[in-house]
Image (cartoon, rainbow, N blue to C red; front, side, top):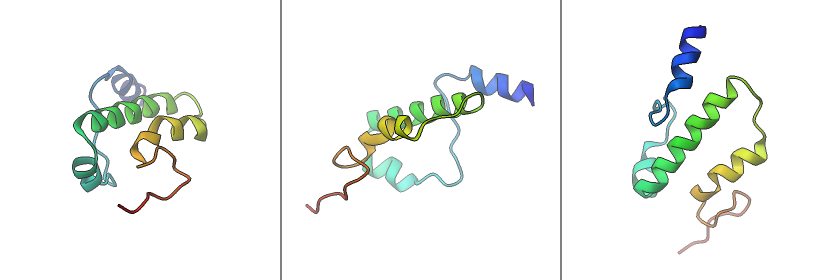
Length: 79
């Protein structure tokens, strides 16, 4: 198991696709730069979660760009 943790921790710009990934959102609703930002943030948090606890506020802040108005607390406005 230590070997797997070391290899996963060594990955910098690559991350796995997860079974429950919303591929429609990832590929239809996000711009390429936003997709990259999401994947890199998720991978960075995954690596940290192996060693540390993550705060909910930190996670929400990192992914708030995926919400249409930048806030997870308000529903998206109808266009």
